[in-house]
Length: 255
Image (cartoon, rainbow, N blue to C red; front, side, top):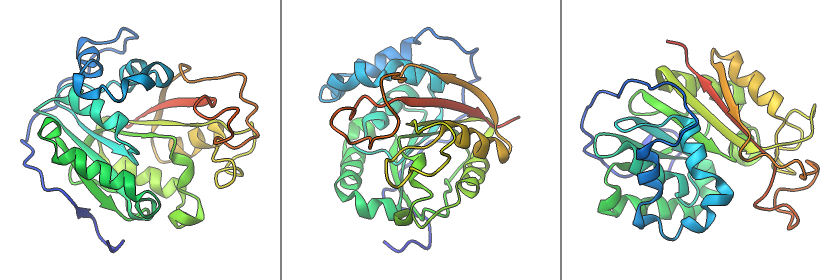
């Protein structure tokens, strides 16, 4: 796949529908989130639900039926499947892979393609985009990325300027749209020092970068925080893997 243009790998017949009005923020898990998490099609994922706090994360992300959502660098599709269940037949989910990342995660890209081929997930499409040219076929309600913001400035991704990337996300969203970032916490004051070594990033630099392009910080969740994480070891270290201290930030595009 050449990294010079947006490539839609799976053509979808998405109906054009109005997004439901935003509901007031709440910590109560909505019934449509509970239903999506309880979907029997997710039986292979449920063992990770408590650790990954899926219902809490979906509630915090304020995703709703009828919305259009980007699951950026979706990995195995864990979040994609839940997004699909929440947005329903009138919504759509874009599983977006930067071309450069996809070369390092071919099995996960194939898993995304296989997911789309399943009629149960007919509202999901796969997009391949150059890492330096994030864009979507339409304005969306939510861009969500888990444990991958720190990858953008690294060499294998082409040393993307995170601020440029953040502006592209901003431009892809509808007014009032949300950008939710989950990532591994690095030592305070370290900035982007550890992105390519420990696979961590300082939450303060993420907030600064995202706010610099016009986003308004809209809240954070502590459901994935772990005070026992020393912040100075690789996230793959067996002593912490799967239980790293993670920040969960929500940013809103004014409008």
